[in-house]
Structures are given as C-alpha cells and as structure tokens.
Image (cartoon, rainbow, N blue to C red; front, side, top):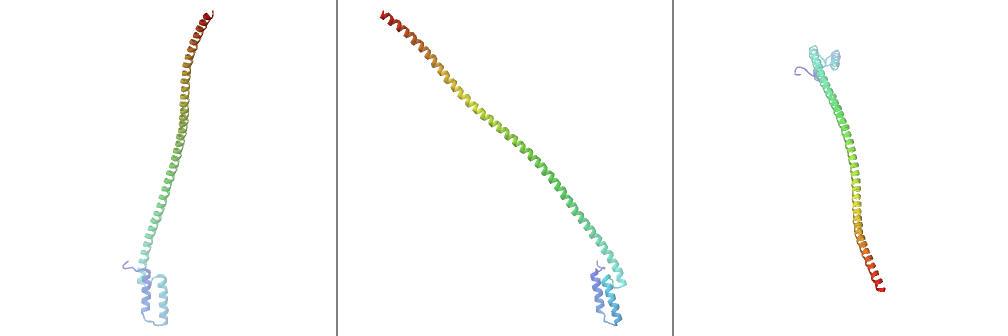
Length: 177
C-alpha cells in the first residue's frame, strides 16, 4: 500500500493539483473541469496514474476477494455454529426425552412400591388384628379352662354333697324308726 493510493487519496490529490495551478483561459478551465469530473468518477487523473489505478483496482479486487473469503469463512463459521447449535439442541432434546422416560419409569416403580407398602400395611393391620383376635381367643380359652376347672370342682363338690345328703338321710331315717 506504500506505492498505491486509495481512491480518496487520488481524488484529493487531483483536486489539489488543479486548485494549486493558476486559472488560465476559459477553455483550460473547461478542460480542467472535465478532468476533475473524470477523476472524481474514475479516480484517475493522468495516464501514469492509470497504471497505479489498475494496480489499485487489482489490489482492491484482491482485498474484496479476501474479505469475501473472510465473509464466506465468517458465514461458514456462523453456519457451522448454527449447525453445532442445532446438533447440541437435538442432543439436549434426546437427553430430555430420555430423562422424561426415566422419570416416568421411576414414578411407575414408586407407585408399585407404594401399592406394595399399602398391601403390606394392610396385611400388617390384618396381621395385627389377627394377633389381637388370637389373644382374645386365647384369653377366652383360658377363661373357659378356668370355668371347666371350676365346673369339675363344683361337680365333685356336688357329688360329695349328694353323698353326704344321702348319708344324712339314712342316719335320719334310722333315727326316726
């Protein structure tokens, strides 16, 4: 870029050179105006500058292609970033679906365990009530056994009293004869 000038530099240089020279005849003035207008539109003010301008345009084209390449690489980078983001989103969606499925499995397992607990607690309540019933029946049986003992004692007492009564009746009957 040291030997080449930008378009702005060339046009400002040509304007300075025109303004520095003293005004001459009207035809020269028109020629200068044409030259200025041409230099403004093309950025070229002399045949020697045409080579510089060509070099400038080639350089400008190279820079444009480089920036195009950079733009392409940037757009490719954006495209790659977008594709990466899409793939990451897909991975995250699949992980989310897996997590949802795992969550539903865990919930169903939890429900089954809760149902088992309910059945076990029902069984334990039934078992406890059966235990209570068994204890009540055992008490009843022990109470009946006690009653049986008492009944057998009463029967034996009753038999003894009958025997005594019979003996007393015999004694009274012998005494009354």
